[in-house]
Image 1 (tube, protein in one colour):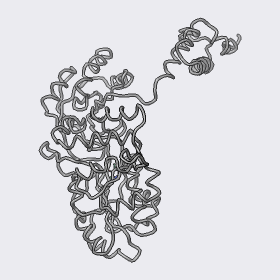
Image 2 (cartoon, protein in one colour; image 1 turned 180 degrees about the horizontal axis):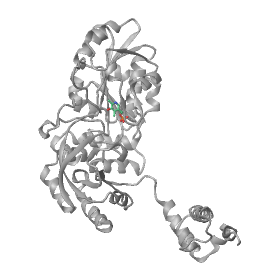
Image 3 (cartoon, protein in one colour; image 1 turned 60 degrees about the horizontal axis):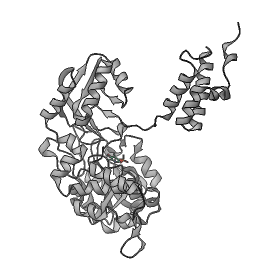
Image 4 (tube, helix red, strand yellow; image 1 turned 180 degrees about the vertical axis):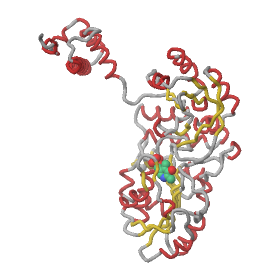
Length: 438
Ligand SMILES: *Cc1c(COP(=O)(O)O)cnc(C)c1O
């Protein structure tokens, strides 16, 4: 018998066929060419000659597959509000509008409109951050990991930075304090133990090489039992007595107290500023609810040192980020408006009854459960929620294949959809996907 692979068509012959010619009218030639090669390769690998659906259909399917963007929106039905794998904070409408406005054309990113001369991007968001946090100065960079790297380089390069062994943490996405420290050029000096660190541990470690006392917020885990650590206020005071500086890696960037909604224990940025730490680093896209960004607030001298450090250039924020962040921050001037319009805050403070309405609309079994804040914020906090439960585990796979993909929780052999993180305007889409796959 002859090998069917010998009868595979040439790419030129495929492209000349009427079906593929129609594809060429609608799609770029390079894409159709790539799809035709993919279709022939697939037939060769399967060893079976022409595809069962015919060449035209096989090439068209490959075109559609290859044209799908690799970054696509999804519906988050996991109930993890700040889901790092799903892009963390969805933006407020005001932030999206601001971002689109500056994306369309030129923007006064580094241009002083009064004087008609070169300006500084570091001034964008600066005054708003000062106003909202009470800090003397502020600087925005690309993400909080970059902000910590920059702060360590600016304040501690070539010297010792002292940190508790209980705070040598790893944050999601391979951010490890000891590794960042090494890259910053600061020498890590560990003090205390995993569960207990006392003021005298820091005091004894201070030498003439010391430059910085570092406090890292344990954002994604809790230490319980026989524990002790030194409050930032005390650490900042000790640092200043000994002519050192204090850096506080705060993580989440909560700008509004959420205790009234049952979420407590996470310090606000304003509280962090009032500790007297020279620099505080936090994320723009965790509890703050803005775009991915790293924010530094602190003393005039410490922020000036960061601006002057070469790393500031390598981690600078772009115009889209700055526009979206500025619009998000502006919402905080009216905290009630911030809570209503910033999706992260809205989801965290939504009342249980309206979550229940959405869960009921989804059909399935109505189950009481817990959502998660996520993003290394409020570790251990439980948010009561309502879930829609469905019996088959395979459904999770089919929902992921939906357009748009729906990401659900799997518990045992059940699929659970948490209504908290499903936006009201996504409910119909989820219902349709459940019907189609039920
Ligand atoms: C999340 C976090 C970071 C890193 O922030 P990114 O914005 O992800 O770069 C750094 N430190 C702490 C304590 C964090 O929680």
